[in-house]
Amino acid sequence: MMLRAVIRRASTRGGGSSASGLGKSLQSSRVAASTQSFHSLSATQTLVPCGNHARSFHHRSCPGCSECSSRTVFSSFQGTTLQKWVRPYSSDSGDVVEAVVPHMGESITDGTLANFLKKPGDRVEADEAIAQIETDKVTIDIASPASGVIQEFLVKEGDTVEPGNKVAIISTSADAVSHVAPSEKVAEKPAAKPSPPAEAPKVESTKVAEKPKAPSPPPPTKQSAKEPQLPPKDRERRVPMTRLRKRVATRLKDSQNTFALLTTFNEVDMTNLMKLRSQYKDAFFEKHGVKLGLMSGFIKAAVSALQAQPVVNAVIDGDDIIYRDYVDISIAVGTSKGLVVPVIRGADQMNFADIEKTINSLAKKANEGTISIDEMAGGSFTVSNGGVYGSLISTPIINPPQSAILGMHSIVQRPMVVGGSVVPRPMMYVALTYDHRLIDGREAVYFLRRIKDVVEDPQRLLLDI
Image (cartoon, helix red, strand yellow):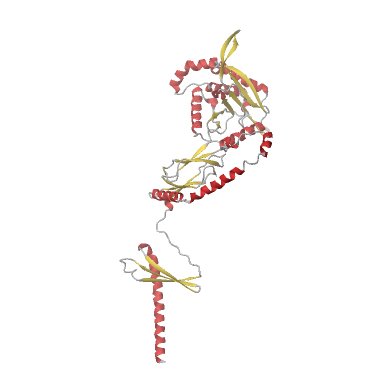
């Protein structure tokens, strides 16, 4: 009995010492937590579930550190669910940038990702184009925000994207190449593993075995003979329309449905304008650095006609008529992607050289696909030159919200009566399509007559008559 009492007292003292030791361990754990960023820690942990409790013992030691040579931390967790959180000591968030869709213009809300100019794993420089977006009017480039390596694309070709959408993830770290290359190799290995091609012949054999059964019924041939013979579907190709083509189709159909379209024609003797061009083209090029074409002569003639007939430069807006006191002439340019209509702004303030320079600049941008939205917005009148493609005569469609369009055509030598004699002359048919709701036939004919008079006698422009 005495011996049992001594043992109980000894165990009671041991429990107190262990409790005090536990308090010291908890204090030391706070110190260790405040200094863990200064030491390289190696930790072993054991989770011991006990009912609804779990205890974790961490023994941490730092090589060569006397403070951490023997430190034990005890912690208790409530509940049965345990989560382990590991904090990374190096963050890669600063080494990754995202390429997003840029602002595409006030009137454009979305576009179609036409094609990628780069591939995952390619090296790109800052502001280098990595993809192209096709909108209703122009093609816009998506530029890389920084130099780096493309990790992945977040969208596919043909997807509809909006300004601000993420398109690609670009790594700016030096190790990006080593991270991307293995992933490609790993992707290639599993692709090479598929060994079950042995089953393919079985499928083919079954198909081949089934094919002889199909040609057995001859009755359908008698019925098909009565039906019209249509071309086989394998000789047809279905290609989705581009956004530019869909936009052009919609606007032209809206023009036909909205306007009361009417076209009037006239013919122009190009002798004097062509003589003026051939006489001064060399001196014109030496002074202005641009060739003298026939288009500038028609633009100047259109400006004169619009000033003489201001209703052709006006437009209907609801129950009102808006008369424009400026002349912004649009020129139709056909490109490989579709029709675009850039604008010559302030054409009434330009001379021949200014008009030729502007036309060359806009046409070059349109063919290269670098023309901007602002360069195609607005316009009060359009000039379309189908003669460059060999068109003899046509009825152009109005470009809304304008009220008229002038169509030029090819120059053809035709016999004409001049001074009582029949002589060959370079002649061009011109057409004016106008909105008959606003413009009467009288104004339309006078407009074309003014075009004819100025082109046939360019000296009228100098005398303003």
